[in-house]
Image 1 (cartoon, rainbow, N blue to C red):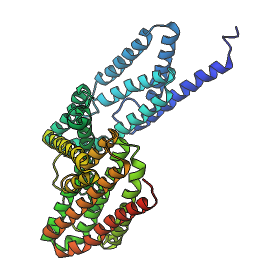
Image 2: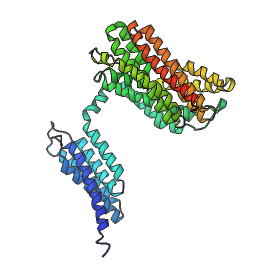
Image 3: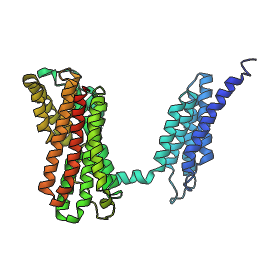
Image 4: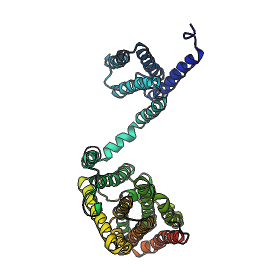
Length: 427
């Protein structure tokens, strides 16, 4: 009799059903906004609790068929409700039916002590339901070639990467097929995120966001596009300078994120260097903000290639491998000076390659912390000087005159932070 009237157990059960009801109300609240939908607040709340009840009975009876039967019954009921005298102009109900089934499953998760996961899935489900227009806009803004590239990225990440051997081969044991491919996936993934966001936002949010997203995809390409546009239209210089500076500041954020993921040990040493350049560069960017915000010049989309294209990803992988071998070879025969020479040269082509190569060699125990940080700092400075040269040769004199203080501020910030860290024996 004591087991039948155990208040603490009943409170636990009631808490689970209350959680399920709250989850159902959250999802149902979004569906209630659509008059054509035949399931709203009450239906979703009841379905979530039904999932918890079915899981409870299935657990008590020690058979999964009660839970499975409840899922099948839910699906049949919802499909029948939409097939019955359905008006062709109304919502066909596919999304609502799927949401109901997910709601049932989430309710079952609550019973099986997965309340945190259940709440997370409920929030994700509600977001997917709410942003229907935005998600449709993403698919419409992406071309067939872009979709193929995304599928190629999925193949690179989830089919090829897991089957590659995670062993060191070649000279200096520097070549690891799994690690090389992982770096390709990492850079392609970061760039692809910015590329999709860039295609999705377009000109809607202005030059500032274009500069940030353009820098996430390719700061070099963004610098070239806006320099060329300013050369054709001198009045565009006030916009171009802020976009170019923000794109190159985004490069610093990008490198910080990459180092944090690839080598958390190096990240605390590299962060102050990148932060020094970011702070001074941001101050220079803010200086041009008033002039930038007072104009309404149209903003062009940077002409960048999809970074997830197989050719682009393979090109980066080849470049990364070459830089990795050169860095290992020159650092072995010429010490740190050889590595720094590679860093300066690589900075003119791809900062990501030398960054990942240096982090990789550090992981193999072939480089010290100070050598890695110095190589990355030199590569970024070389990249900034190269892009400043592009502004001089491609853009007009007004743009070049405005970009110089910002670019120099980034270089000075990084250089100053590096020398201060060296003076304080930070490395």
